[in-house]
Length: 523
Ligand code: ME8
Image (cartoon, rainbow, N blue to C red; front, side, top):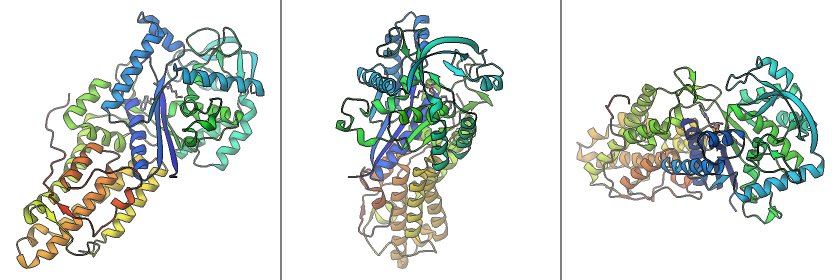
């Protein structure tokens, strides 16, 4: 049985339309999932929509709709959009589905029976926009304002069910100490450890001020707080809360390899969620990966500022540059690490021109054009292509690229994954520059040498197309068709494709143009 891998995006709120932030996280996860499938892993990739809570209830009211109708509409739009973005998720979970609700109720019963959840009274600083309470220390640090909306925190008092989060402080601290990779990138981990040291308070997990949510079992009027409801999606999609979880064919995917989230929701994922899992005696996810934010002109993107790169803007890029160019930009120029990334049209064009037009596209068209021109598209096995030509040991270079890609994937370093593939294209460019096959072609006596150089170039192109395919699936398929090679296939074929293979034949290679120059002005 191949090793399993499980990657999740946050589930997105249905009170907002899909925008660049959703596209970003989901595209990163998609590239990772595609890579792991190529590498032979048994992958499960989950995304979905978060549909309960006050925010959705209010948005629906404002639009004169029921929350259910709003959720149906927006959730459907998210699913459509994922299709347009080439996302290969294995499931799409909605928190309003009976399978989710039923399991959340069961989880909460278990938590209450074990004493991890109890009925209590609470007063504290409440962030209405985020539906989140803050401790006195934290509220003071925040100057009694929401860190997200900037609106004042309000003093609120409730009788609610609580989760005994405080009881897990030292176990959580120990887990973070002992597992340096539990939170990535490293800077984010230190933030979490720092906040843990301040101590944890129990958190209310039900509300009585709204009805659009999962009822707390056996507690009339209490509705499960949307964050607790939402976090469970990662487990309910696998059936872990069903009566017989081991019987669920998806149970094998737990624990998750990566929960990928934006930095603003790291706390819930790195502290609250693991504590809930501890209370339920379930294994913890291997890593929470929290990326930073896309910003615009140095400012946070927000609905109120109206500066979000919305679906229409994204589709504009798809139309002019192609979906793969968009995916490439997301993967290589986005806020993957700890710092935010400013979205600029000029950056997009620069990345497109230097990486895709000049490097990937140019390398692919030069090599295929020469094979077509000098060998009528057919380069059978002339000699062992692993011979070192012009000081370029391609066998070693391909092995290095493969290792770099695998290591990058193990750290969710999608930018380095991209680099492993495009690095080969840069080396190929240098190789052609040094060996000058277009000059050798003029000398009939050097035909064997020419064949070997082009043969190696084709093999490198093929390897690069495999490494780049998780990021740019459509164009890499086209490249492979031009190489007369089948599309990359899932299930452990990667290592077989990222190496020199004297037994491969290239017949019917045709010149390919992958990324045309785009001259129009910005939208
Ligand atoms: O928080 N840059 O949903 P949400 C990069 N339902 N990524 C961004 C971004 C930006 N400017 N803005 C949003 C929720 N994102 C909850 C999650 S999970 C159990 C519940 C991405 O619709 C990023 O991944 O507000 C962020 O965490 C997510 O969208 C928030 O989506």
